[in-house]
Length: 148
Image 1 (cartoon, one colour):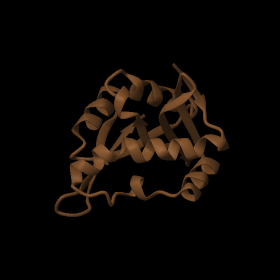
Image 2 (spheres, one colour):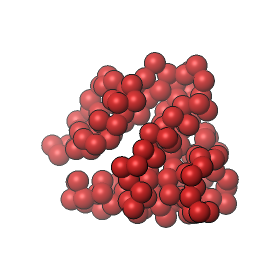
Image 3 (cartoon, one colour):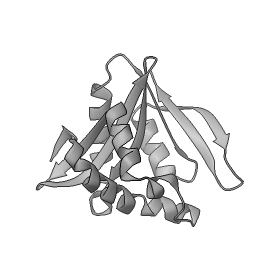
Image 4 (cartoon, helix red, strand yellow):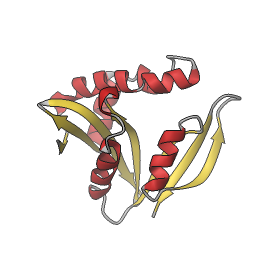
Protein backbone atom coordinates (compact mmCIF):
# COMPACT_ATOMS: atom_id res chain seq x y z
CA UNK A 1 0.00 0.00 0.00
CA UNK A 2 1.55 3.28 -1.10
CA UNK A 3 0.38 6.90 -1.19
CA UNK A 4 1.90 8.81 -4.10
CA UNK A 5 1.38 12.11 -5.84
CA UNK A 6 -0.92 11.46 -8.78
CA UNK A 7 0.28 12.05 -12.32
CA UNK A 8 -1.78 13.57 -15.13
CA UNK A 9 -2.24 10.12 -16.70
CA UNK A 10 -3.86 8.87 -13.44
CA UNK A 11 -6.77 11.28 -13.64
CA UNK A 12 -9.11 9.11 -15.71
CA UNK A 13 -8.68 6.20 -13.27
CA UNK A 14 -9.22 8.56 -10.30
CA UNK A 15 -12.40 9.91 -11.89
CA UNK A 16 -13.72 6.35 -12.39
CA UNK A 17 -12.94 5.61 -8.73
CA UNK A 18 -14.71 8.83 -7.75
CA UNK A 19 -17.86 7.80 -9.63
CA UNK A 20 -17.79 4.44 -7.84
CA UNK A 21 -16.84 5.72 -4.38
CA UNK A 22 -19.48 8.45 -4.27
CA UNK A 23 -22.37 6.07 -4.96
CA UNK A 24 -22.82 5.71 -1.19
CA UNK A 25 -23.09 9.51 -0.84
CA UNK A 26 -25.67 9.55 -3.62
CA UNK A 27 -27.64 6.88 -1.77
CA UNK A 28 -27.67 9.06 1.36
CA UNK A 29 -29.45 11.77 -0.61
CA UNK A 30 -31.54 9.50 -2.80
CA UNK A 31 -30.11 11.20 -5.87
CA UNK A 32 -27.34 10.52 -8.36
CA UNK A 33 -27.29 14.26 -9.09
CA UNK A 34 -24.46 15.18 -6.68
CA UNK A 35 -21.38 17.16 -7.78
CA UNK A 36 -18.77 14.34 -7.45
CA UNK A 37 -20.84 12.18 -9.80
CA UNK A 38 -21.12 14.98 -12.36
CA UNK A 39 -17.46 16.10 -12.37
CA UNK A 40 -15.79 15.94 -15.78
CA UNK A 41 -12.21 15.03 -16.63
CA UNK A 42 -11.67 18.69 -17.55
CA UNK A 43 -12.78 19.82 -14.08
CA UNK A 44 -10.58 17.21 -12.41
CA UNK A 45 -7.63 18.32 -14.57
CA UNK A 46 -8.23 21.90 -13.43
CA UNK A 47 -8.14 20.76 -9.77
CA UNK A 48 -4.97 18.75 -10.51
CA UNK A 49 -3.27 21.83 -11.98
CA UNK A 50 -4.42 24.03 -9.06
CA UNK A 51 -3.20 21.88 -6.17
CA UNK A 52 -2.13 18.39 -5.12
CA UNK A 53 -3.88 15.12 -5.94
CA UNK A 54 -2.74 12.02 -4.08
CA UNK A 55 -3.47 8.41 -4.95
CA UNK A 56 -3.46 5.29 -2.80
CA UNK A 57 -2.09 2.38 -4.81
CA UNK A 58 -2.34 -1.35 -4.17
CA UNK A 59 -1.18 -3.90 -6.75
CA UNK A 60 -0.83 -1.15 -9.41
CA UNK A 61 -4.49 -0.10 -8.95
CA UNK A 62 -5.66 3.19 -7.49
CA UNK A 63 -7.94 2.35 -4.56
CA UNK A 64 -8.07 5.78 -2.94
CA UNK A 65 -7.49 9.45 -3.57
CA UNK A 66 -7.69 12.90 -2.00
CA UNK A 67 -6.98 16.39 -3.31
CA UNK A 68 -6.26 19.80 -1.85
CA UNK A 69 -5.13 23.28 -2.75
CA UNK A 70 -3.72 26.14 -0.71
CA UNK A 71 -4.97 29.71 -0.56
CA UNK A 72 -4.01 32.34 2.02
CA UNK A 73 -2.28 29.82 4.34
CA UNK A 74 -5.33 27.51 4.36
CA UNK A 75 -5.36 24.14 2.65
CA UNK A 76 -8.77 23.14 1.32
CA UNK A 77 -9.14 19.36 1.26
CA UNK A 78 -11.67 17.73 -1.01
CA UNK A 79 -12.94 14.49 -2.44
CA UNK A 80 -11.47 11.99 -0.05
CA UNK A 81 -12.41 8.60 -1.47
CA UNK A 82 -11.62 4.96 -0.95
CA UNK A 83 -12.83 2.12 -3.16
CA UNK A 84 -15.93 0.55 -1.54
CA UNK A 85 -14.18 -2.83 -1.24
CA UNK A 86 -11.39 -1.23 0.84
CA UNK A 87 -13.31 0.94 3.29
CA UNK A 88 -12.93 0.78 7.08
CA UNK A 89 -9.26 -0.20 6.88
CA UNK A 90 -7.73 3.15 7.86
CA UNK A 91 -7.02 4.25 4.29
CA UNK A 92 -9.01 7.48 4.60
CA UNK A 93 -6.93 8.39 7.64
CA UNK A 94 -3.76 7.56 5.73
CA UNK A 95 -4.77 9.80 2.83
CA UNK A 96 -5.71 12.73 5.08
CA UNK A 97 -2.42 12.45 6.98
CA UNK A 98 -0.44 12.44 3.73
CA UNK A 99 -2.27 15.39 2.15
CA UNK A 100 -1.68 17.41 5.33
CA UNK A 101 2.08 16.81 4.93
CA UNK A 102 1.91 18.50 1.52
CA UNK A 103 0.86 21.79 3.13
CA UNK A 104 3.08 22.44 6.16
CA UNK A 105 2.14 25.34 8.42
CA UNK A 106 -1.35 25.64 6.94
CA UNK A 107 -4.75 25.62 8.52
CA UNK A 108 -6.85 22.80 7.04
CA UNK A 109 -10.48 23.02 6.01
CA UNK A 110 -12.91 20.53 4.56
CA UNK A 111 -16.64 19.95 4.44
CA UNK A 112 -19.15 17.15 4.31
CA UNK A 113 -22.87 16.84 4.84
CA UNK A 114 -24.62 16.19 8.13
CA UNK A 115 -25.87 12.92 6.62
CA UNK A 116 -22.27 11.70 6.27
CA UNK A 117 -21.95 10.80 9.93
CA UNK A 118 -19.06 8.37 9.34
CA UNK A 119 -17.07 11.13 7.63
CA UNK A 120 -17.75 13.59 10.44
CA UNK A 121 -16.57 11.03 13.01
CA UNK A 122 -13.42 10.33 10.98
CA UNK A 123 -12.54 14.01 10.64
CA UNK A 124 -13.16 14.70 14.33
CA UNK A 125 -10.99 11.71 15.25
CA UNK A 126 -8.23 13.32 13.15
CA UNK A 127 -8.49 16.60 15.09
CA UNK A 128 -10.93 18.55 12.92
CA UNK A 129 -13.57 20.66 14.62
CA UNK A 130 -16.87 21.91 13.22
CA UNK A 131 -16.78 25.67 12.74
CA UNK A 132 -19.73 26.34 10.44
CA UNK A 133 -22.89 24.87 8.94
CA UNK A 134 -24.64 25.88 5.75
CA UNK A 135 -28.17 24.81 4.90
CA UNK A 136 -28.35 24.09 1.18
CA UNK A 137 -31.90 22.72 1.23
CA UNK A 138 -34.33 21.09 3.65
CA UNK A 139 -32.49 17.80 3.13
CA UNK A 140 -28.92 19.03 2.70
CA UNK A 141 -26.79 20.74 5.34
CA UNK A 142 -23.04 21.12 4.87
CA UNK A 143 -20.76 20.94 7.89
CA UNK A 144 -17.44 22.78 7.63
CA UNK A 145 -14.54 21.49 9.72
CA UNK A 146 -11.09 22.92 10.38
CA UNK A 147 -7.82 21.90 11.92
CA UNK A 148 -5.20 24.43 13.01
